[in-house]
Length: 577
Image (cartoon, rainbow, N blue to C red; front, side, top):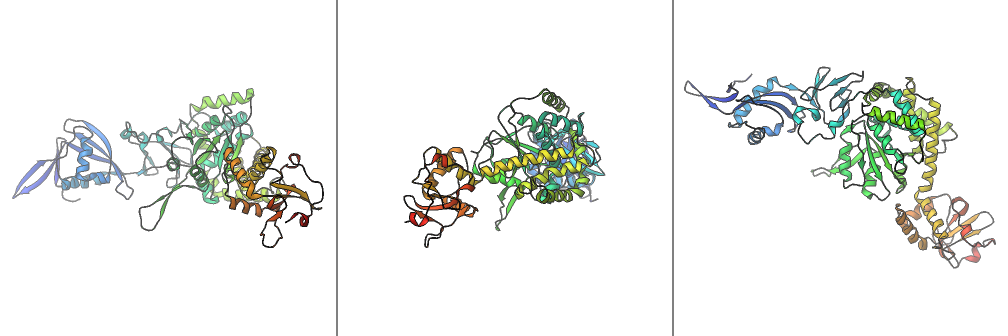
């Protein structure tokens, strides 16, 4: 220990100096202090908890960062707490701190609640839940010890009792409650039917989101679709109640930006967030933000460097969306969701009773349910990848119902089935696994049918069907003829595109630019390129002009009942200019 250049007397500090052989004492404070805890992070933002007591016996506790030990900042911080004064200079303060730091207790500050990779625990604002199911509560200062290490959870520390910070985290409390995982799952299924089964799977995966994202590189949304009063918000808040005592939705219709949303969802690891009031009219930047969440990216922020680097805000938790509209603005967003339909008009007595039971138990907390899920983390770490790809192979190659689905749909199916297979091995599911398999696949097939209807090219054809039925396009714009092999549609694309554009904008749908849309149309199997020299892929038809040709029967639209067809065999040579 270095030479002590100060002394402590009557709750005051005195600086010591010597003139010849005479000791000189100069009073430099009316208080003394003790460093209770230090939270290192390798930067000037590292903080310490100080206990200060003045010469009248008045005590206070404050958290102060390393940069605030600069003399002027320190004096201001001390004075702001009341009758505490420091009149010394920087070297006096440094001497005192050097001495006090020998006795400080080091603890790690937990800035992101939820799963903690270092301690392998699950952090709440009021303590740590370990993988064995034991909860370790914080002390008055927000410190909890686990396996010989200290962790600082600031939200409920007496230091922040009156602070405006950590408002959201204060609600993320561990409240054990009475209901276990099996009981919770059974009531959820009783109340919400097949939707409840899919929600249980999504919930289990949320607790292990880091494992799943590391293995798959994506994490889909759960989208709750239906009108008001159908139970969407109530279900979402029941699921959120495992993580917080005050579950709240985050409205997409407010003034908050995608950056603000990204900051919110980066503050909790392996939990749930609920974004509500999605509409197809939301800002394109918000749509892009939501698509990025699927790939684990919140938003990119430029760094103040000369090499054009960016900082990516990570997405650390699962997302539930809800809305009265299907997310059809862009099929790329819809394909990133797992859609649940909430359109039932009435609820049975059993459904109502189970819902009320869950609502009543919500007041006591559902942390016991979360604890039982979290206890199987090692099981997930060791088995998720293997079981996921086994399920994927079965769905893609062996199941006649699913092997025709697109790649993303099959991956989402395996995503939902895998946690149920793992948990079923522990005999925790209140339903047979084959029932879950059936309902999850049925839901995916229905969503896939909807997906086919809202693809950009399909939207185009639906607009043509609508425009024809409303006499917005006529036989000056298209014709349907039979060439002896199949029916063909000849369409003046340049003339109908502005009408398609208008249709989409009125419907709140995404509008593809003219060049991109025709490229997509040409890539479809039903497109027939023209053979006329110098005309590219187009065909010139009398009375219509330059057209593109498509196999009519493969378009899944009905123009014939709205159009006076010529039944004669179509002769291309006679009808081209």
